[in-house]
Image 1 (cartoon, one colour):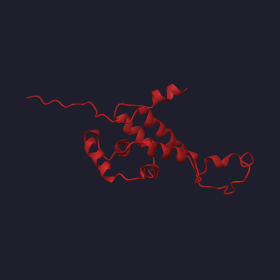
Image 2: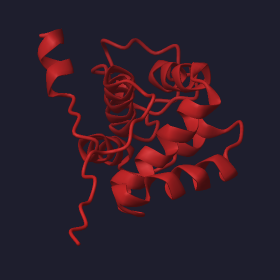
Image 3: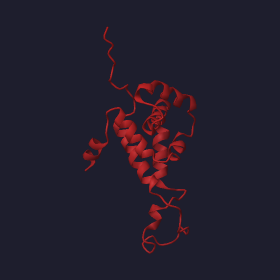
Length: 144
């Protein structure tokens, strides 16, 4: 008796474009540094534009990431967290259903904050996406 394994990855409802957008935003957010010029009335040109790379509370990159994640359905948010866990190596693609179920059990209204607090989020999402045979390369080429 020959046992064959199904090697096709499970389906996810998140589009590659959605995940790649979040990867870009996570990378933009990751480069932020502590605030060194606290005076918001200072002249950005005089400050060498250093404020752009500082982690201010009203950071537009953070706001855009949070708004995008909050606009996702609960199922998509669950998949996004599970995808990050998959990319982090918490389990393999063969345990996707269990990983997704655990993400669903832990789901709350702070998905975006949870993800932004995850070091290397962009790398984890990219790795998780590649596990599904997807890549942001096509997305990047389309924007050039």
